[in-house]
Amino acid sequence: MALATTDASGKALEVNQRLQDNPIFRQIAVMVGIAASVALGVAVVLWSQTPNYSLLYGNLAQKDAMEIVQALQQIGIEYQVDQSTGAVMVPSADLQEARMNLAGQGLPHSDSLGFELLQQDTGFNTSRLVEAARYQRAMEGELARSIATLANIESARVHLATPKQSVFVRQRKVPSASVVIKLYSGRTLEKGQVEAISHLVASSVPELNVSQVTVVDHKGKLLSGGDKSAQMAMSTSQFEYTRELEAHYKQRIEDILSPLLGQDNLRAEVAAEVDFTVIEQTQESYNPDMSALRSEQINEQQSRLGEIQGVPGALTNQPPAAGNAPEQAGGPESEAATPINTSKRATRNFELDKTISHTRLPSNNLRRLSVAVVVNDRVVLGEDGTPQRIQRTPEEITRITNLVKETVGFNIQRGDSVQVINESFFIPAPPEPLPELEIWEEAWFWDAVRQAGGVLLVLLLIFGVLKPTMNRLTAQVVTPGVGGEGVAGGGVAGEGGIEGTLEGAEGEGLALEGDETIKLPGPGSYEKTIDAARGMIENDPKRVAQVVKKWIAEDAG
Image (cartoon, rainbow, N blue to C red):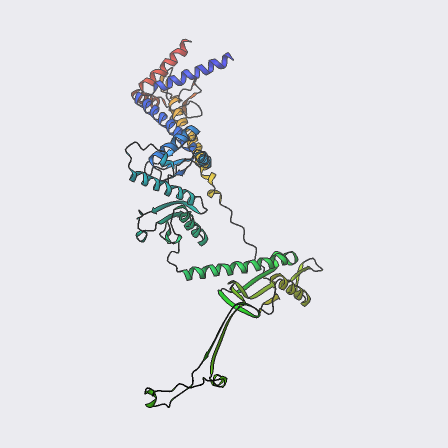
């Protein structure tokens, strides 16, 4: 153990001595190169360990970005801020975790504030105009929040126009509203959803009609049908009703035939003709057999006419002559001869049985129903075990037809028709499996390549730069010296050991074996050895002096 420690110390001292024997500028250059190599290796290692960053949130206000950064610091998730766009980025592996944690804290805040505006301190000098504007802004924010909760909608903005009402009824103005919605990429809104948004806004603002609500998407497309007439809206509702009725009958057919034939062995379609005519009738009827005397009035008159005298003409208008009174008055014969005028009138009022009826017939009358059903062949196993298709028998088709008729409520007086046929369904080819991603398209591949590249680069720096440099610095260079009958010379040692060679005239040379043995040159090479030694003394006198010191020390020992 002591011998090994001594050898290690001796080698360390020898390496140190060899480093000191190099020129100062060479030592500085080597040190700078080693430091640069180490720094480059450390940079490569850090670069290979740096994770990929993904966008967390973009287009953030500075206040929201500051709150998000503070929340990420508290959570302990690394982040980066893009200097050009101000977007906050986090490592790809922590993206979903960061979003969930921020969502739990209510970050980022929505641009549309609701009734939180009314909770802020307004001071004592706030006017009624400012208060009304803040209340309207709060209403718009609350509506925008409600609309943004619907599916397929990323964000929404609501603008309300509520004019100041006049005390005169004729001069009143109706309020209006406009909604701008931003949809997720590749998403659309159905007509029913647009109408739901319009009714939602109209129901939230007093005296706001649905026709005064305009809905526009982020591409500038008008979604609400405010310009449609009442007739068009009615036609649309009638079409929707017909579609729902047909879908109802179709579902009933599939529900009853699927357990018998299989879900994929039948196709059904229903066409319904619906009469939307609105008919109203008003009828008034009397029953003459049921009458009752309500009132009766009888008027009877009788008068007696005087005897007709004189001859019609001028003489009749003359006054009569003096007449003589008769001695006897007229008797009963004269009274009987006088005519009598009699008038009799009777008025009777009767009450009859009166019936008044107002009938409004339903408008959604099913006029005719047409049903078409296609069933697939029966599949049976053959003798060899392979499936075979067999046409269905007429009896089976008849049973299926009767079953469909009972399902849809077949009415021959209404003109309904049901058609069931048997055809072989086309079997599509199985879909090809999705192509697997190449290994270089995987998310982890480039991270692994970067780390492996960093390791290879570090190994290259160690074994390709640092090790050869240290070997050249610590290699023993044998310099010529004078001893006995000749002088020994040498060259720079290789990596395998320390040895030098000077060629002689006869092919012999002198070499250093290990660190101790020196072979003298053979005969005929003395002059060449002297010339080589002189050249080495001129080029590197320090190394020559070191060799001479070593020889002297060995002789003294």
